[in-house]
Length: 117
Image (cartoon, rainbow, N blue to C red; front, top):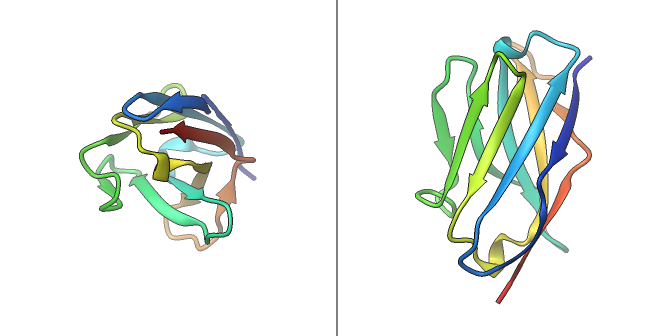
């Protein structure tokens, strides 16, 4: 069982930056694919970025070039650096973990990001 705890959300003006962190415990972190998703009010949860256990990354087109995902296997953390934020980035951001070869997803409790125009 993996536990995920997000931190770093908040209120920022458009064009600003925020750094989200996700601390994982309860599993072998290096064997997990880690990702960030987000859910805006009235919308479905959507993929933002992922870093696979081998370290490669992928981004949603909407955040490509503005967001950077990184992982530190020694500290069991994954970070989402968000730059050039836009009001449409406003959402609750969730950390996600999935072990290699598994279909079981683990989720954090979410952290609110609000971008004002």
